[in-house]
Image (cartoon, rainbow, N blue to C red; front, side):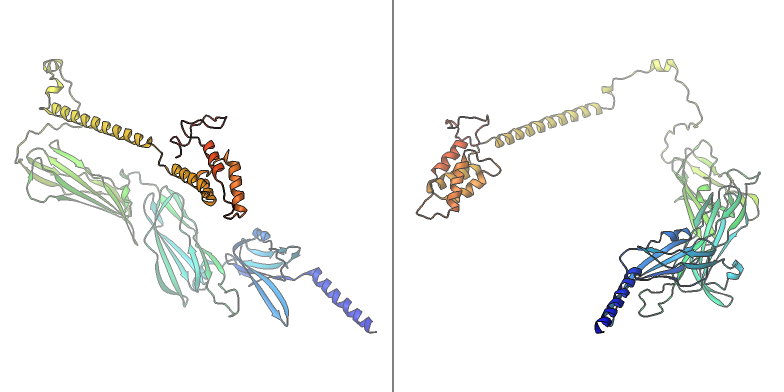
Length: 559
């Protein structure tokens, strides 16, 4: 009876183990909220109990969702001696379309999670969003109707009514339009429908480069709501949902420049100019330079569109204009182009000089009419020069040079080149000869030093370290100092073949490793004879019958 009960309990436990191994740990999938609004993220959680180490496959989510962020963590618990482990994946998903979406089952090895349904609704209208949403955008442009290449001011306001963990706002990028950001963003607070908002305001200056319809695409704000964790022990801080909001699309009319518009085309709200005379003293004399400073300011027009001023002068005044400087000043009211230029004038003779710049025609955007900028002429009294000199005649740039008659060329006597220059030719020749002599002397000295260095390198090498080592080896062999002889051979034969020394070195090693004492003294005569046979002294006949054709290593011999 007892055996039957024990057998039943064993079969029950075995069936439970088989059931647990057959189905594995459960995989659960869930989302943090449902439904959601389009351009709003949802948090997807995948919990795997008793994970097998295989990673889940989230590739199926790309059909209907955009994965903004992904993270994972592992949790381990021990309850009543039983250990359990789970792994959790958190994904921030942004739906791609409106409607009823299904998050498909996620495969983890051979197991799959449950499917999750999500309902995505449309966003509220723009008029209903203001004052009721956590975030919303307002975009406006002035004027609604402008001319090509004229300034359009764009204002973008982002209203934030909830804690914001992070966020980014795109920049306007209309086609065929030059965009300039006007300074940094301004931040302030306001109230809409009884709710407080923090406002981030940005302004831009747009310059459409072609006529027609100017389309400003919707701006996109991407932000994550800041929210604290619901539990102190929650391993995932609740950062909040990620939201996307878009502004309205703007369409403006851009007209071509009027048929009666002047050339160059200068559409601006205001154009002013000034001409100043930079003269330290009141007296102006012939041959002395005079500096004029021109300044042009255009409201709502880039500086590189401004023309350089032109002066009408007679042939008695030379004109040297400097390169114009173009600079743009950006303020909240738009762009102001500034052109500055310096012009140097040199009158060649005394008399009266009138400085009258040419008028500049421009188009007034405020009155939608053509206007003219004129400069007040300056009349200067030029006094005679204090040091009268003969001024060369001023030739107009368009004047054609007259050919020289053959009679004048025939009467001109050419002098030899060595008789011109008041002795400068011969002075140059003497300096060149001195330089040549110095170069030859320096070359001879360098050659002598090179020969001395070569002689030093070919001197007797009888006192080289190798020669000294060989002499010490001879002494050690005569004295029977086996250990000293081995150390000297290691230095002399570093990287070389032993040759005839092989047998003598073998006997030396056998003597040293045998641990011989003073009763059996080592005889170094055989080693020294073998050394002399391998390194014969010059002038003596070597006992070797073969020659390799190489010169002896020690030409002076060993002593």
